Image (cartoon, rainbow, N blue to C red; front, side, top):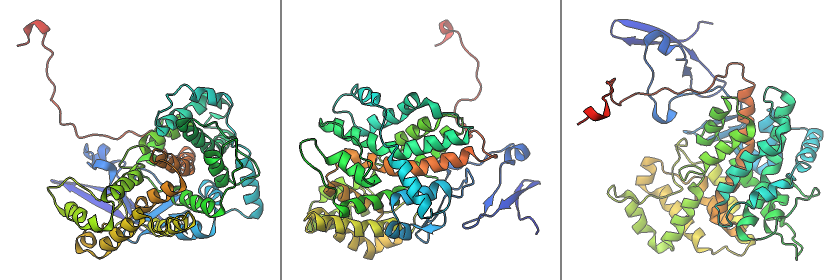
Length: 430
């Protein structure tokens, strides 16, 4: 088969670069030797047209509104599977058989406890510290508490670190929450499932028995599945970039959490909820839609559109269904925020302005309402996102470490500062 080539002509000179094809999706032009041949770099702010790695984990088709984990549509995984099954799939590449699933669940659940000294480490924070600030520190500190699995060249160490991260993240997240509200930490229970354990650790108190509602457990489990991975987004790219230097996995995931904290990434659902609360009632929607259309008004409708999806976010459809289930269970079927959300969605799907700009509701549009109804404060929204995304970060990190072609990340730049100039002694400067 003849190799496909891309030709670049600059003046009287021409160069050829190989074109590589994936199993699905657009072809890519391999420009790894561009600078050596042309003494030029490409300029691509935000890396929107650059494939920085080769991956077998997650595929997104933004035009078709498609999201696949290891080839499986997110709709099928979220409806028929559970979060730990998705974790197994992302880590190992295949869905587990019953024996593999049972063993994996058993292993993860029995690694949920954290070192007892971590509670004393956490007590050094102010009580009103943001839970995400606490999470960045706790996860980064894991390399000090679990330094027996930091050899990234050892496959067993990589496996142990991966399991520890997935298993202990809910415990640390619940500790950050409990600390922020002044309640005692709750230890995990091995007889409970992953998501049920997390709900109990967040909402139980010593003086009362707490029974996990299966509908809420399933709803949160589905939210975790929907957020488990999302290809080479900002936080995942941060984890890969940190990992490319040989940093340990706990440090890499801590870097990913720090990136996720940004309002343009993990904080988007909190921003969408704040917008719905600002609008208040369906009657006020037209004026806010008008403001969104006004180029001179800084107001933006949060929870609409996506950097990648140019069609309806497939996760948003599942999230809408989950929102209805939770609100019905908790008696919030007439929740004013949901009424505002539904009417805003209806307008967005029929208004020419939104259709033309392809501003469809995304997952953040509904997830904030759901988490609020469950009892989580807005400060915990991004923590839950980080909990779910941990498996994606770990799978991507593991894939990168095991890739013989991986190199330390080193983006280049277009320099626009001062050209070379001579130093002037202080006494001679005007």
